[in-house]
Length: 80
Image (cartoon, rainbow, N blue to C red; front, side, top):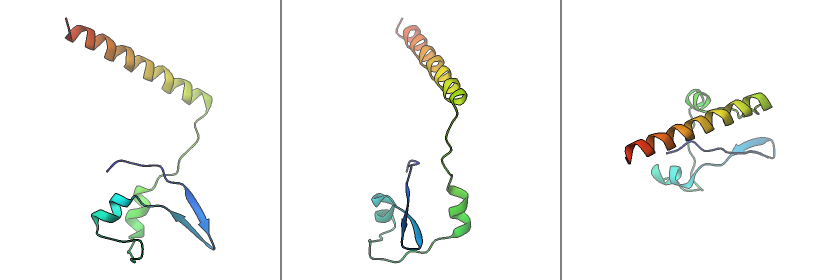
């Protein structure tokens, strides 16, 4: 399973996050079932999305372009 971004929503006095259907199907759970959550393990896997500043975005763009140029060079060498 891949990492997915989920939006938190407030419903009444609770905050909820959606779960992927395939996850529920893998544990044979239906939307009307009750599931148990291990708070310690859940806390370890949840990560808050942090906004990046312009310098970080610029650095990531430069790195992505460098990787793309490397890939193009490598592919050209392999086909020769």
